[in-house]
Every structure is written in structure tokens, then in C-alpha cells.
Image 1: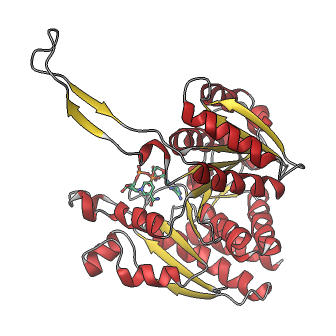
Image 2: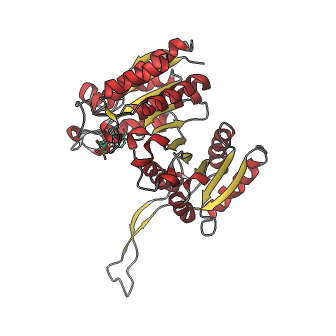
Length: 366
Ligand code: NAD
């Protein structure tokens, strides 16, 4: 298996937060004898400026030779007026589709030290730890046919009427592979999977439910429950701690993962992973390139540092180094260190991006 990690800092705060995450990765690489080699490349606006396109074939080839990608963020006002086809975001989409990253893992973790950052009552969210597993390359966002067509004229609409349509489609194998990711993840956590669907209305999710039931037989230690998406949206704000792993399709996952992220109130803390069936993954913070604070040393690097932990867990297979990083992040929060986005009101020390990275390093060495 490749021991190479491709680092793509991207734009805006990307290079600042990735520099801190890289320091941490280099340290655990040495401490845990992981034998990883780190190479760096360009993506998004940075690649447009250098190469005219947001993702080059060369970068894609390096990605294919790697075990994982660590990405910062892409985009910014400088490239907003460009044609859609060569916008920075196309770089991300290109990586996702070319590398078949069908499984998006988004943990929503609320460190007890940050419970005040949530808009919900601390007792409802303190200690929250949910993993949302979202199917990323299928479902209604990609289903064919799709489009806007003009219908034949009728008495009510003599000029004809325009009609927009999309197709919600999942094949058995697509459902099975995302289900497996959810069950496997649950085995490493609290062994509960909640599958979210709309099986009372949509046939495609009746099939989804059937396949999840079939899969559950292979994982007797995991408790499988089903929930309709409307109820899931309610339960996430009512009693979110009931969930361990939630698995769902592309569109429901898009919405629920943002809702779950917001329960924590601190987007600068949330990592994510997008995986393919070979265990290759792209790891990145959930937030964007934050051009409003770029270059000011205010960006929170913890989401990117926690993305390194996910990478070590899922693509490098080193649970101990992943846990060490997560433990170190807990320690710096215990010490009262906060970047401005998570500073809140209490008695805390506000630190810069680099100081936060240094504090995580110190906690790892302690
Ligand atoms: P954003 O996530 O970049 O920023 C939203 C708000 O959160 C801003 O106020 C920002 O300062 C703050 N913020 C984000 N990350 C932070 C961090 N680590 N520390 C402290 N504060 C942080 O979203 P946006 O403003 O909607 O988008 C800005 C750019 O990012 C756009 O060009 C957008 O297309 C791009 N974007 C990229 C990705 C990605 O690369 N995956 C995702 C979302 C948005």
C-alpha cells in the first residue's frame, strides 16, 4: 500500500491551516513510525493561477499514487467571475469523481469545553458525537433524466408550461457499499446505525431500507434502526445524543450533515472524509476558504488537524496516532486556548492559528 500523502493547501486560509496540520502530521509520523512521505500540490484558485485549470492531470496522477489527500479549502472572490467550468470548486469535484469518493463521513462532535458555542442548551449537546455517512456520488443529484422541458400547450397554458424534473435513483450495489461503510464505522464506535430514508413515499428508499436490513445480518453486533428524514431532522435538534452513526443518501445527507454541524456551533472544529472502496480518502475541514480572515492568523486549524486524525484512522490504519491527535486537541481546549471563532465569553486565552498548532504539538509531546 502507498505510504504517500498528497497535501493540497488550496486557497484563502487553506495554506495557513494546512501548514499547522502538516506540522502535526510530521510529528506523529515520527512518533508512531508511520513511514509516510508527504508531497504537496496545487488545487483550486492556486492551480488556476499557476496552470489555468483548478486541477491538472499531473496532480490527479499524484493523487492516484497516494494513500490519501489532505486538503485545505478552495475558492475566493478572486476567481468568482470565472466560467463555471474552471472555477476552483471544479477542482474538488474533479477529485471526487475521478477517485470515486462515494462515501462522505462527517462527524459532528461537540467537545464539552465548547458546549456554550452551540445555539442549543448545553445539556442537550455537551459531549455530542455523531457520524453522518452520506452517499456522495449518486442519488437525485446525479440521476438521469434531468432538466427543464416545455410541455405541450393546454387550455390552461396555451403557450405550454415549463417543467423541471430530476430522477432519484439508487442501484442495489450503490446502497450496499455506502451501507457497509456505515456498519464498519459503527463497529469502531458505539455500534448503532440509524438509516434515514423516506420509505413511506419514495420507492427508491424502500429498496434502500431493504438493503440496510440485509446488511445488518452481517453485523450482528450493530443495532440498526430506521428513521424518516423529516423525523430525523426533528430528532437532531430535540435529542441529538441518541445517534451514533447515521447513514443516508446524497440529498438527505447534504441537509442533515449541515444541520448536525451547526449543532456544534463551531465550524472551525469539524473534519470530514470522502472515501472510495479501496480505502483511499480525501480529508478536509467542513468549512470553506474563509477569505474574510485569510492572512490574519485568525483561522482555526483544529478542523484540519482533526482531518489528519481521520486520515490516519481510515486510510493509514493507525488508530493510536489518530486517538493521540484527538486527545491533544482535547488537552489544548482544557487549557483554555481558543482561536477567535470559538472564544465565546468565558475565561479563555485567544491564540493565533500558529499558536494553536504549536499548542497541539506541545500536547502531543507531553
Ligand atoms: P466559509 O466556510 O469559508 O466561511 C464562513 C464563515 O466561517 C466565515 O465568516 C469564516 O471566516 C468562518 N470560518 C470558516 N472557517 C473558519 C476557520 N477555520 N476558523 C475561523 N473561522 C472560520 O464559507 P463561505 O464564506 O460561504 O465561502 C468562502 C469561500 O469558500 C467561497 O469561495 C466558497 O466557494 C468556498 N468554499 C469552499 C469549500 C471547500 O473547499 N470544501 C467549502 C465551502 C465553501
